[in-house]
Each structure stands twice: as structure tokens, then as C-alpha cells.
Amino acid sequence: MNTKQIDYCIELARTQNFSRGAENMFVSQPTFSYQIKLLEEEVGFTIFDRNGKGATPTPAGRQFISYLTTMREEMKRAIEQGQNFSSKYTDTITISLMVRQAVYFLPEAIRIFDEKCPGVQIRPMFQYEGGMDSFMKNESDILFTLREHTRQLAGVLVHELFESHIYLICNRNDPLADKDMITEEDIYGRTLMVGGGSPAALRAVQQRLMSSGRISYFNSPDHDSTYVNVAADKGICLAPGFLNDHSGQFAWIPFECKESFDCVLLTHRNDSRESLKDFLSILKKLYEEAVAFPF
Picture 1 (cartoon, rainbow, N blue to C red):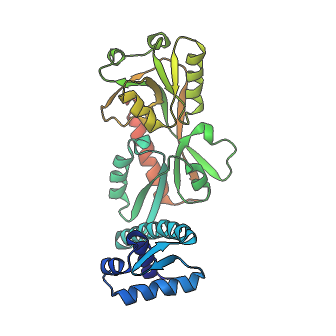
Picture 2: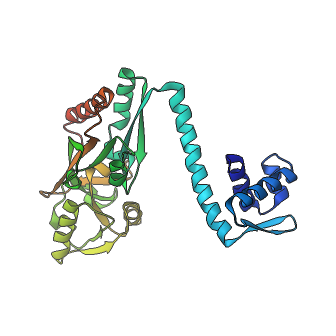
Picture 3: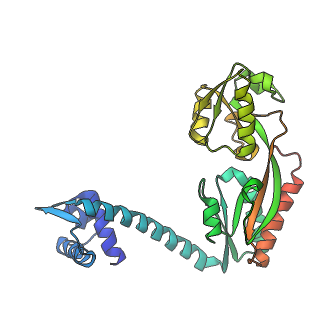
């Protein structure tokens, strides 16, 4: 199986027509049909049911094409990364984080690092879920996470980054947006969005509020759904400061509580590259100098 056959197979599944598929792939129809036939002979099952010039995937073919499509996209990304790497870089450092804003100073750190180590590429990898598993499989070099998730991990180094606090999120025209600090009493009678994979410290605050009997609550499946519900005036929510994208769409007001989040970076203990140490040093310095920044 080669990439040309994979592309032909995906295109035929999309068009379900040999003539149109061949035309879109800039080959003759006999060539197109022959390559599909060779692919079917190689895999040992019928991928398409033929009907004149038409073709529809068989049940086995649909599953096979689904895998091929995913594989082709991964291959495309791998080729693009390889082209980027080979043209300029001699090494790469991959940092995994759940959302772009989690490491707010990452773009600035990359700019500074690029001046010091122009031959080393910093590659962000966004993984809202599964980041820890990916890191432990050595698929990334740095992982942004919370200290509570680092217990009993072997072969890793933990680097302190910053302490993040809890904020209340509401629409900017909400009366709560005029306050400098939100207390529990301020949100009595309101609807609080909860759930969505909240960290332990945030869950503790949510449970305390819900047990008061003074607020309503609404279960939201994930962070993005919560944002949509807040924008629709269905409620307010509490969130870690490290999720603030500073876009100005919502008001983020500090919430008065003792709970907070220790945000850290993980690296592999056996990764002793000087470039990695330099990059971590740059990031940590940026956060140390941003003592008044709202995290």
C-alpha cells in the first residue's frame, strides 16, 4: 500500500464515482480503477461495491477508509513537521498543555529562546485530555499540569511555575463585574455552572457553595460548554486563573477563598539537554517577573 493508493481510496469514498475521482486526482480512470483494485487485492477484502461507474464502500470498507483517513492526516502532519524541522532546526522540544492560555507567557518565551537557541524548535502540543499519558509515553518533553497530578510519578522532574487562584466568570454587563472581589454571599441566589472536569481545589469550592443551599447549580460537560452557557446568561462559573484567555469577552473577578492551584511543568529525569534547561529557565523567569499578573 502506498500513499497514492490511500489518496485514491479516500477520494473514491468521497465522490463514489470512478470518473470523478480520477479527474480530481488528475489521472486516467483506468489508472485510478487499477490502483483501487491493487489495494483491494493487497488487503484481502472488497473495499467498494461497484455499480457501473459508481462505487459505495462496503461495511468493511467504511471502517478501513475511516482508519486510512486518520492515518493520512497524521502522515500529512508528520511530513509538514519534518519539512519544517529539516529546513531550519537541529532539535525540537515539545511542550504539552491543555489550552493555549494555560502557559500565558509561552509565545514570549519562544521568542526569547529563539534568539538564544535558533536551531531548536519549540513545538506546542494541545491535549485537553490525555496529556499525562502522552507525556509518560515520551511523546512530549514538557507537560504543563497541576502539582496534585504529579504524585507517585517515577522518572520525572517537577518544576514550579506559578500559583493560580480561583476567579468568578460572568458577562461584563453583570452587576458582579463591577466588584473587585467576589465572596460567597455575592453569588447567593445565582446559578453556578459546575462539572466539566474541574480540578480538586475547584470542586471543593463548588461543593461548599452547593451545600449552602443558597445557590442553584447546572451541570456543564466541559469548559467550552460552560463558556457558552455563561455567554447565554444561563449562569456564572468559577474557574482557575490559568484558563483566562484575556480576550475581554467575560469579566474575571477574584473569588475569595483559600483554595488555589500549584501549576508546574514536568520534564523527564533522563532529559539533560542544555537547550531544555535554557527554555525552562526563560519561562520561569517570565513568571517570576510577573508578580502582579492575574493568575
